[in-house]
Image (cartoon, rainbow, N blue to C red; front, side, top):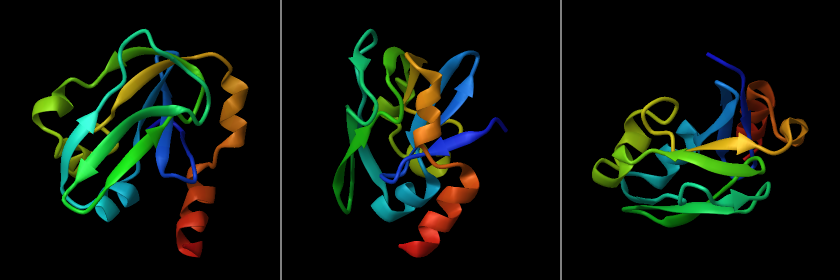
Length: 124
């Protein structure tokens, strides 16, 4: 699996085919409980790092999803509209939310590596 980077709000980004694939972590999905709705961004929208990208609702809570990197939305996971539970079942694969064409790959340096994120989770 390609290297994944994380935000403190539990979003992740993984570089794939020159774009950043974005989702929420398994930890976040478990904390939310059963996901019932995912609001995805529109294709073509430009976002800055840590800007609002979408939202997610579950039986327990509603949360905003923030962009881990700046870029332009080039693809969204339309499968989540009819099957939001994919975020719970497969947060790293089928539960991804958007693909972003990165504006500046150096922004990844502001995020946590998998190892750093694991340590961060232990501190919560």
